[in-house]
Length: 394
Image 1 (spheres, one colour):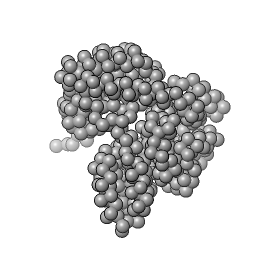
Image 2 (cartoon, rainbow, N blue to C red):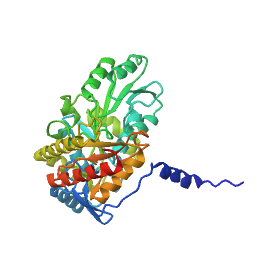
Image 3 (tube, helix red, strand yellow):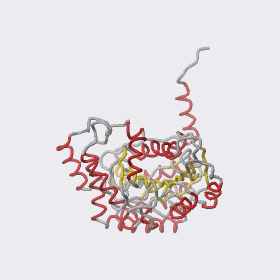
Image 4 (cartoon, rainbow, N blue to C red):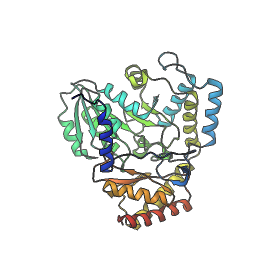
């Protein structure tokens, strides 16, 4: 019997649908704003990472327009050959200033940063990479690309981390990798303790601050500022794709780190450099955050109010400490049913199901935005109250 080489594509997708693990893509028609148009319906946006509402800030838009006019639509090359523009260099100086580090490097995406750099920092079987069990998938893929031995410690368990470190004396290099703010639960890694243990045992530290920039720390400067350890994390990795409102990954640290990264990291070396408009908009986003801290203040006013009201209704919001607030549903079909209820009442909030979370940990992951008004929040909370009761969650 002749084999059908692609039959698995349909059968595996149909199985995902049967179990409630598939994604249903909706169409955003226009900008990502607090009130937006999705599939022709006006909705309150509660599932965007645009925490500070900067993606539509006039300074970012104008910077992108000006750069496209002065530098063109694209760079024409990878940065290592002929695509290293002055705009890229100016952006990296702004990142280093913002993070209070010696140097910085911009990547095309946050995923490309983790997948391309983690494996190079500890590439060989003589090395050890130690990872939090709830780290982001891009971290997991970066670890898998390495030949290094792997150690996984229970979530935010510093005793578990130290147990692994105690057994690492024979390793050439040891790299500890953790999210700063965990993307599904919204809790914060004990980065100060991670740095302390790393210093004690001679390990490198790599903190993915993608959901921390613009949200935690003084003036939204991220996890280093949050714990008072700016400049003490060996690799502070982050993104422009969330609170900063544009797109792209970054690392901040020593000049030695940056020199190493752009010579060894193939996701950086072999990808075309970001368009001039993107580089200019990213730089403008940092400048806005530095000069307009009120965006962060408004975000936190909304975070505190929204969490308090959800809990008062009887929802389980887990251990969230940040702009990510999960509304725990348990079973995936129940999370999808609540999302549909919310959509019908004008709220865009999507279910997160396996394999992004454990099978029994499905949730609606809400993401707060500085641009949401109290009227919008109350409208969304009313929908959660009604939908949660209809689905049987509260």
